[in-house]
Image (cartoon, rainbow, N blue to C red):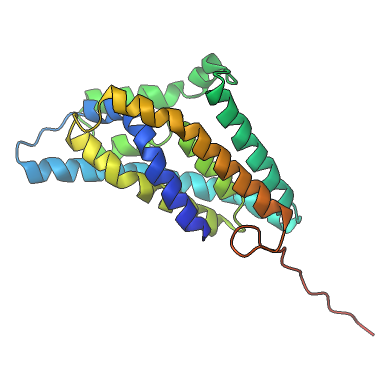
Length: 229
């Protein structure tokens, strides 16, 4: 399975969680069009803005990943990423708080202020979607860990683009229809998400072990060395 396809499915399944977390914010974005097709266009722009931000974040983290690939550390980073994902999943399963929310709040305060200003002053849905893409989200972080394991900034940007594309369908429906998924359905789905994360973490670990299993754990590509007589 290709990295981009994995990213798409992370986004697709993760968007079920995003409906509960980001859905209320998306639904709060005012629309000043009475015609249904203009309303849909607004929501398309909003979600497209999120995808653009995810792609941009992928490009940025891709420069870090590129250095790791140049130094031959990609296998170790893949294993470390898998362990990190599993730890995060276990923290959700056993309800252990691993983050300092106050520090996150201070770091993201400028984004929150810009987002509030944009919504109060009737900014375009695309701009609000761009800003929303910077807000903290567990599945965005999960996708960025995956993007870190790609060999170049372009590959990393593509990974995050496909992640965003995976979130697009369900979030579009959620932003158009507030009654899409009730709280009971979201709670049941959210309970299963950490177990999906454990499986994904195991896949990252296997991929870093170079077990020569096609698609699941491919062998490390050897770089040819030219000998001079």
